Image (tube, rainbow, N blue to C red; front, side, top):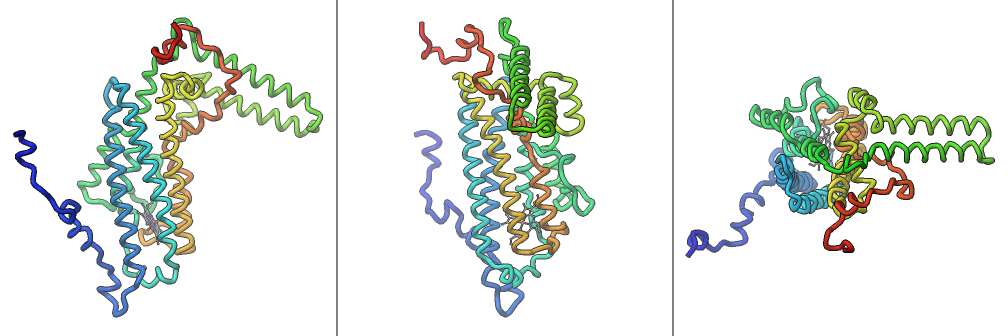
Length: 369
Ligand code: HEM
């Protein structure tokens, strides 16, 4: 008999899930303080509790993915598992967005029946939400401030320390950046990706310029404007064609991903049809999904707050809707991956990979002998 079987005891559904604790953890304040309890306060409590449970699961998934990637050498087999866990994160986020509709079945007037009793409790005090943001890679310098205090001011000393350690350590953003920097295909046996890319971009821009100049459908003024706009796309290409321009944009806070990691992300996006790059491409797509879902949640939550409170200030002391809406615009984490779309060129313009490199990027069992 193994140790595991020796210790094995049977268990009841109620006990395994500790339902005694969970189902006795709803205590509407209006029921304690008022003669007539507010019916909707139960919904308010349960929806928040369910969110916190899902935040716990998100943290569990994100921590495991960071752990896989923080090693110097990432086992290729782990990438599939990481992608699967990030897909799970995205599905949970979709559910979190949908749950807002359940909250919105409560009317603003019904909310006012118990809102007084919530002061000064607020979503600002959700430690797990902050942990999700920090684990993904949101840094204090990127955050909007409120109440002229750091966002950690509402937590205990221990929680504050935990967030600070996480912020300074490896977050998903940083481990993925380091992994991208190690991409081995940027210079391969005489194939200099950037050189080929530069000439492909130049050809594409010249053709677009010629098309604007030649069209009969635009007058001289419109043509001038279009050519000017094309010029600004041209400037954006400098972020990858010129490391100095990239450094400057990084210093100005327009970009965050390192130069080397940005080029690797571009290469993965452009050559994602090559078998070996399909999994890394999937990983980058899931990170974009996570960022997009979190942003969507922020917009939806802000919209719900507008519906419930109008322009009233929040119980946590922020301006309410205006603050929350501004976080949706500002608190992006993987914006650099969205920026890659500006740099893409059509498949037909892509430089051909040398045969040796194509073979390296293929699955060996599917190649012709
Ligand atoms: C009637 C429903 C709700 C209202 C009126 C509401 C209102 C607000 C307001 C006004 C804020 C800004 C902070 C403040 O000044 O208090 C806030 C922040 C927040 N709320 Fe809600 N909320 C509601 C439901 C929820 C739910 C269901 C969750 C799920 C956990 C949630 C999570 C958060 C979080 C995490 C923040 C901090 C956001 C940030 O700083 O980026 N809220 N909420």
